[in-house]
Image (cartoon, rainbow over all chains, first blue to last red; front, side, top):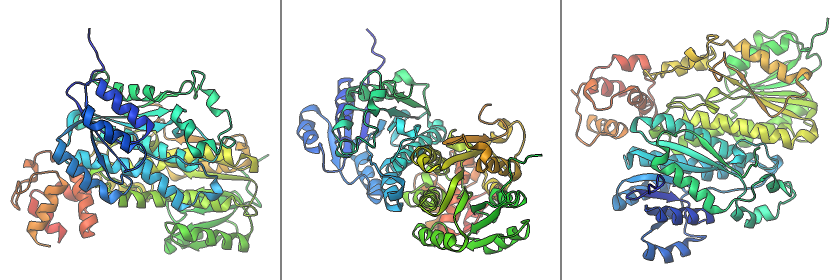
Length: 251
Length: 251
Length: 72
């Protein structure tokens, strides 16, 4: 039986691995036959990943991925040790709820830095060193916030919209090397519901906003499946798109 | 005969008024009876623009809008001296061509500070209590790049997508204060910024002009739509991005 | 900055291996010397040397030396 989504022989770099979604992605990619190199800040679920990495062959690097000056030297080291990649997944980033009146420069910078600048810098470094094979695939995990107007989420929404715009441009610019670049617009994921800034702001988040997802709250595995789909040969002609994965939220 | 675009008695703030679309908008609004408050970093340009205005009660402010921390005191000063604002138009930004390989975090941050940061900070300050009159309308200048991918415009496109997204959010967040926000989305317009942009064209295929089948746009084409969005004629329009693109996006 | 350093900067910006080009190299002979490469050099001249090179000017350049001379 064919398996159009298999990733045997592919080496994928996953940035932001030490999160619920990151873990789900690493697991799914491994089960589809890929070799995974993961990276994240040294906090969160990183210990879990470290413990597993010996047994399942995942290589794990840690550094402050939002510290832009550290990205180039660290990626160069990773490329030296691991070789070229067939795919790159950016599932890092931060969320945040803040009304306009408190949305000052420093908060915007923090949001843009984690959700856009780090992504652009990583792709810049990977493509500059030719460490993504021709025909490779890049997937950024964005959000439906990119296209919806939401109260108190101006900076977050703007950062995700900027991320998607950069994905479209990179798709045009890297097309010469047949590298595909796409993003996923995810809705409410199960793991979101556990986050403090979400729980503490249910009023602002319009309390039952997540009920708009008629198909229910999303399991991280679904995000992983969609990432794998975009990394695989099944999507060889898909580039520059933002794939909505939202259980009907934007209907 | 009625004139739905009569701005008599209204005070409109225009950031980036020394040239191009900003200058044309200032002139148009002055001809429609508005008092215009013009901000730009270019003193000579400001004076030149002022000499083209009709009517009286206009004022010029020369300062650097990329210094985000200086915006709050400046807006306070302007409102103290001249009263609350009825409309705000943001017409400044860096428009540059840069391949991904040259978009370092520092450069990206600079572009974002000017294109997006100044927009958000000005909106944040102007929409504080007592700084605006009921019916305040805000217009930002986006770009077709916000929605379409292109080569060498990643940073610019991302900053414009951020603006469109922020406008969607703020339209919702500030609706209770009866404030409307929208963006205009131009394709290629005949301005000094476009001329410099062209100078950097080292042969990159720019099919924008051929796809905007109504030909090259003029600043007045965009100014007309901005005036409409600032007026009471558009009081049910908010959170939207209106193309002024000679058909580009639809072709 | 010496011409050697400038050449190194160009090789880096255009993702060429070290010592693959010299002053006399014809731009047209450089692997992958397309419009994006030209734009990269325009941005390089601005960032590193504060010199504004236009698209029209760079299209007139024939050799690497033309660029080095422009950089000043």
